[in-house]
Amino acid sequence: QSRKTRVLCELAPVIPVLVVGDAARAEGLATALVAGGLPVLEVTLRTPAALQVITEMAKVTGGHVGAGTVLTPDDAKRAQDAGASFAVAPGATERLVRACEEIGLPLLPGAVTASEVMRAMEMGFSMLKFFPAEAAGGAKSLKSLAGPLPQVSFCPTGGVSIQNAPDYLALPNVTCVGGSWIAPDAEVAAGDWAAIEARARNAYALR
Ligand code: 3PG
Image 1 (cartoon, rainbow, N blue to C red):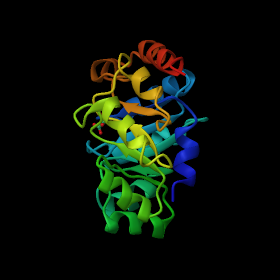
Image 2 (cartoon, helix red, strand yellow):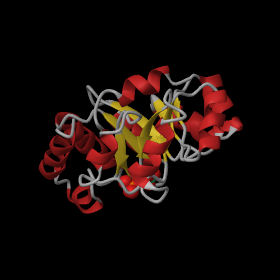
Image 3 (spheres, protein in one colour):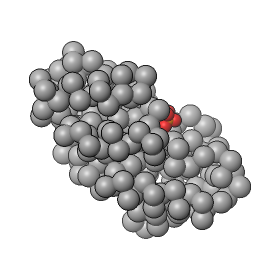
């Protein structure tokens, strides 16, 4: 289940979590992030423009564009049709897992507790999103899972920043982190690609 998402998570230390309201910004934003060394992009399905943003970003050479906030089989289908090459979910349900499997869309599902992680393992996953990372106890909490569940790797997301990212990336069970700090709304709206590319470079240098 996690073969492809693991490869994606190994490509860069940070997966930018993108909330983009205007598809006209998609190409410039994705180009800046890829140029800054962050080729794996998560476009949240939280704006009416999200699917169109995915389609535009998927055209950018060198990028790997996925859909975030994928909650239902319908979300997964629409994201894939729009050009998403993977899906991220805040949690995991059997219905969603089955749907992604059926359409061949790699899924990075979320888990926080030992039971959630064990259930995801039973469904065949070994690469998970740890969400909401900071609110769920942060790096300390995630480190505790590495003892009994060393075979599972995580992409902690939610409250992750350039300041606390190193704490996560130092853990043996963290492959990369996710976060929206890379592309602040105001800079995306203004098309300030130089600032976003610079922030991406800083993030790339975390590893
Ligand atoms: C999300 O899905 O909103 C991500 O977890 C991003 O969280 P962040 O805005 O705290 O980085």
